[in-house]
Length: 117
Image 1 (cartoon, rainbow, N blue to C red):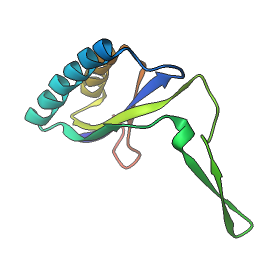
Image 2 (image 1 turned 30 degrees about the vertical axis):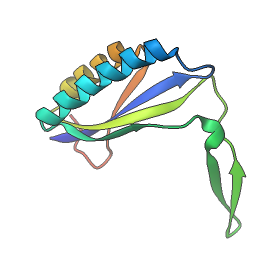
Image 3 (image 1 turned 45 degrees about the vertical axis):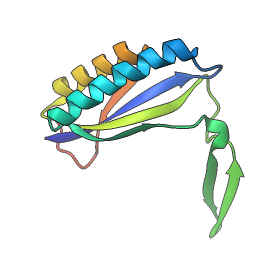
Image 4 (image 1 turned 60 degrees about the vertical axis):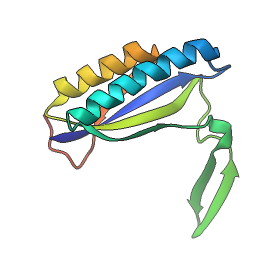
């Protein structure tokens, strides 16, 4: 099976209300259990907002560190899931289900080391 990255893109701003977040987390837990039971789960987790990031850049043989996100935007990578799937269509189905559970945009990408579909 091939590996795919499901990137969860989150808008800037206040997080959802606790009740809404509990519902999303419960649906994601069901998806994770199903991924695990089918042997498709590899790894996944949520990320802190971009203000917690540190960017490292190589410049003239030195590494410069700066606080904050690499890019500014209205959305940021809020979390990700790495799955195994037999093909892109199966990975897209997992992505579709994550989009329904989170109501957020999900980007599905194969890993470069995997053969193309």
